Amino acid sequence: MMLRFLALWLTGFGPRRKAVTLLALDGMAATLAVVVTVLALPGTPGGMLLAPMWGTCMALGALLGLHRMKLRAYQQQGLPRSLAQGAALALLLFLAPAWPLSAAQVLLLTALFTLASMAGRLAMLRLAIQAHALARRPQRLLIWGGGRAAQQLAAALAGDESRRVLGVLDHESFRQGGRVAGLPVHAPARAAALVARLRIDRIVLALPPTAQLRARQALAGTACEVQSLQDFAAELWGNAGAAADLSRLLGRKGLEQVLPEMRDSYRDQVVLVTGAGGSIGGELSRQLARLGPRRLILLDHSELALYEISRDLSEAAPEVIPVLGSVCDAALMARLLARQAVQVIFHAAAYKHVPLVERTPLEGIRNNVMGTRTLAEAAARAGVDRMILVSTDKAVRPRSVMGASKRLAEMIMQEMAARGTPTRFSMVRFGNVMGSSGSVVPLFAEQIARGGPVTVTHPQVTRYFMTGAEAVRLTLLSGHYATGGEVFVLDMGPPQPILQLARQMIRDAGLTPREAETPQGDIEIRFTGLRPGEKLEEELLIGARLLPTPHPRILRVQEALAPASAVHSALDALDEVLARGDEAAAGKVLMHWAGKQWPDAADPDACTLATRPSVPVPPRLAQSAGPPI
Image (cartoon, rainbow, N blue to C red; front, side):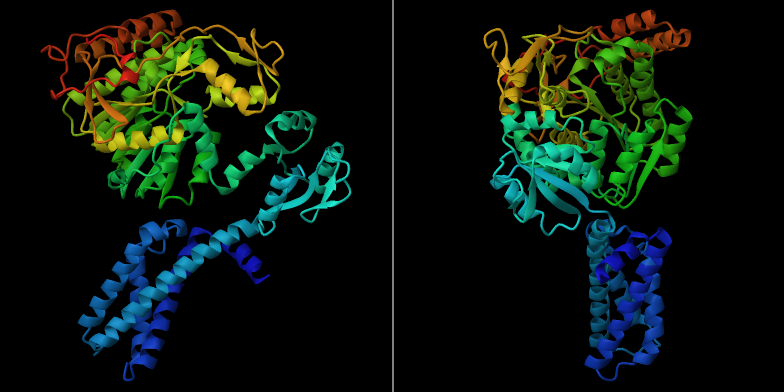
């Protein structure tokens, strides 16, 4: 009961109450230090020390910003500040002529104060985490399945105060009316009534894959969430299982979880992520928050997406600042970069869905091309240290408006790098991200859950894939390596046949593909044809000259660069057609400039990068490398 009372009290904390509480905590730690020192070392002037110790400790804490720091950031950012607070206190006690204290008294006072202050903050952090869970209404669950997996899940959740299992659904009539793991067992036919009566939030399917599809169909009209045991376990205990599944689909081991060498590049930096509400921008924001930036600024033009990512990260970094707006707004970009003193930009804002951008080319060009120009020019004027563009394999010899717009964005970044401004402009190019919005993996999973058909554009279509977490870790590491002007390419492994991926996902669900050779299969695979702008095979390289980096999965590409005059001509032509609102002309102008081949980088009229010895093209990338240009 006492813990629940504290939970309700803590969850009502606003910034002012939290600051006052943390300052008072320093005062209590000072009192404890004085009392214990007086008891341990007789002769210590306790009465004379108490009030000055209170004021000094609280003032030092305020100067170091300890009262404003988020509790979740304390272990990473606050412990060094607490040690600095203790060291400063010791120095003041030694130097203060009014307090004739011995070295032993000073050391004991400061050690006790520092330990008490740190312990108090860590205790508040633990209590706040428990309070957050206790203050929310427990999630009400039903488990479908009476086997061993269901029993283990029920036992695991028995002590979880944030989730409450209220019953079990089971087809076996001999179990119905009895109990499994102490929970009443009901017939699945009663699911809808139980959901309504017990106010169930979620039904977890502890069933073999072959039975899950039928269970989902039976629950189609039920007013609650339905989730597989695997997905529920990944949510509850982490995504290790999901990562293993994606690695198996990719046919290779996943990337290491920690790349420690990049931490110093972002610690205590002011970092801006554009497109922070998207798949890649959101993952960038989450991983950056764990690297200890001074401020993390999230920019997106979608109010809902920005709200969700800022809510997710509200306690993850010392200061998270959501900004609603567009990279196309030059005044906003200039004001934001100057006021926030941004040091690093990850530019992930882009329209990326090929068919949608093909249908609305003007908006694709305005956002992907002109937005990149606006942001890059603002970054150069504001003296930003680094700007990294998140690019795509569709920018290589593009056939779609989306790919061509990203190629123009790359050309803008390379031209900005060649100007010689202090800002380092670089870009990272990679293929499809598994599990991102619009990608085939969640689409296939949804189609399989509905009973099919699974739609594949062409029997021979292939794509490069990487998990979002992997792509972002390597993107952050590329930003660490950036010196200006580079095109980094991520080694994504061999391209994956989409038809094979569809077949594997169907089999993983315990079902069989229905094709011409297997007409009795469970899930039909239907070919829909390539859409406008799509390729059978994507490419990662324009040229074949690759340079090594310290990480084997990151390569630096030495490509021929467009002359600055060509980039300016392309942008002037696009400005003109955008002003006229001429969709047909916009697409033609875009494809003309994005598809041009330029002289070799050694040409004196071309922008040049420093010449370095090239390395052989890895076999899995060789097929995507066109002739050197």
